[in-house]
Image (cartoon, rainbow, N blue to C red; front, top):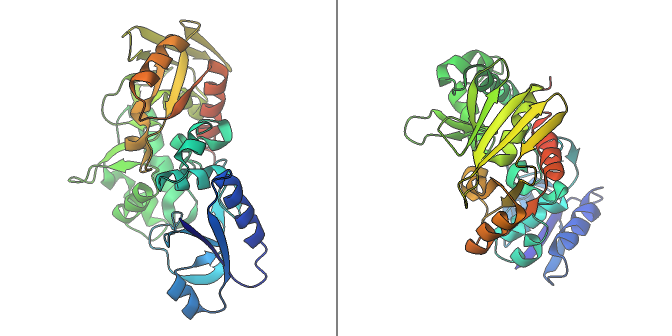
Length: 325
């Protein structure tokens, strides 16, 4: 693989980008080239979408929808919603895993809190940017799910999009492209907005004082009460045994039944939206042994078993900030 870091002269984040690429490679031995570009013509020729840009075999895996080559300063959104001058090591590992180069290196830690790409959009977090009406529409979608248990019709979101001078179709398309939600390809209706699902799944969440909703995965289910600051009862089943798993959240505490229940967090190599890459591989299990049985039966899905403390922490960090102003 050819890895190229494109920068402008004296870019303050060039060395940071190179350092993180090397860390993500974890000794895999690929060569990293640092190339300085000086004008817009070169940016267009090399496809530099701001400095620094990281190309994997000539492809920018972090390019946003509609990216235009430029010599401007480039920032990347981290898992906690903050911005940085280079992609996180976790995000780079996910991108490299998608190319098939470092799958073995990434598999061992793909579910660490700081590398949970399967729910964190490759390290960029699930809190939509405030620009271009993305956050306003995204939050309107989430509030509608929380109030009704169903996805809003696109027309109901027009006022939020109009405040940014855009149509709701434009905003929803961008949110889908960035994997904040998924759309039905034929109707354009919302099928999921992490952590919610518009169609039945294995995981049901009964919100105290609100409706019963479906979540996309086990971590998403734990994230709903954290996001809404509300009590809830989560009902799921062990994919191996078929036995029930129930989690009741009350204020800051959660009661798991059975007490030894765990979560397996997996992700299919190759990348793609979380809905297809990993949501069906993030499940509750009644025990570690049951989760390991499922993992042994699915050797093509790397991942690891998380205990209740780890699972709850990841859910809070991933979904807790989504509805903040």
